[in-house]
Amino acid sequence: QVQLVERGGGLVQAGGSLRLSCTASGIIFSTYSLGWYRQAPGKQRESVAEITTTSVTNYAGSVKGRFTISRDNAKNTVYLQMNGLKPEDTAVYYCNANRFLGVRSDLWGQGTQVTVSS
Image 1 (tube, rainbow, N blue to C red):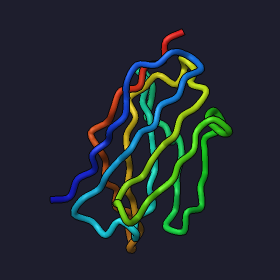
Image 2: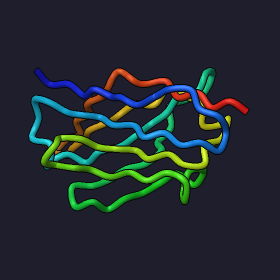
Image 3: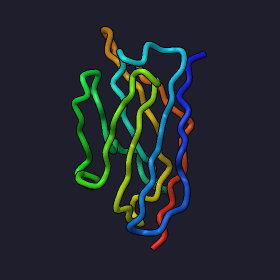
């Protein structure tokens, strides 16, 4: 069964830290690029961070320097370390796995809530 399962969301005060994890099953994990997206109430889903199969990373400007994405292919897991959290980081965070084989295919997790209080 193909699935992505996120863990690690919760409630934290501004300035605090959280680490999200996403564990995949049913796919050849190392062949997928991975990403974290978020969606705040009333807003569109946006990309937060991405990591390629060769561990090249890319970040949204709003999180650069505060968030770190990493992957552990041996554990089929991608992480998002979030430091210096701000109230505007409050959102549901989604894990994404994608690859391009002629057409792009995307897999999504169920999402995990991150709430940052001021």
